Image (cartoon, rainbow, N blue to C red; front, side):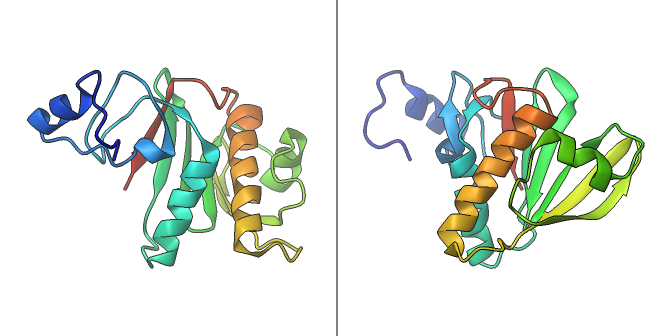
Length: 167
């Protein structure tokens, strides 16, 4: 939680509305707060998102999903679940031929789990070929997430249009 500081009344307002502020660790909050499972407008922190995903995996919540979407463009979204990344796929060619041009994965191994032309692609990532350990994989995935959002989806990581939902 945010601690004892409540200079602008956010905690008090959230308490009055029955809201939980449990997602604030994933991103830098803006003026918009809402309960867990609802939309929140934030400036992203990819490392915090990846850390949250790994926490849930370590707690054996394998169905845990984090969805990041653009509040201004519903066709721009990304889902993280386990070792999979699901994104829109507006292309017709095989993802193995299209995605490398976006410089997303670099040295992190990846493979296409499923895809449908002009609809979506689900990519499985890792484990790393190098002996980086769990922290190295977290760092690598955070970099992949940032490149996926910026290079592939086309909106800067620090945009406040990103919305994060945990399910």
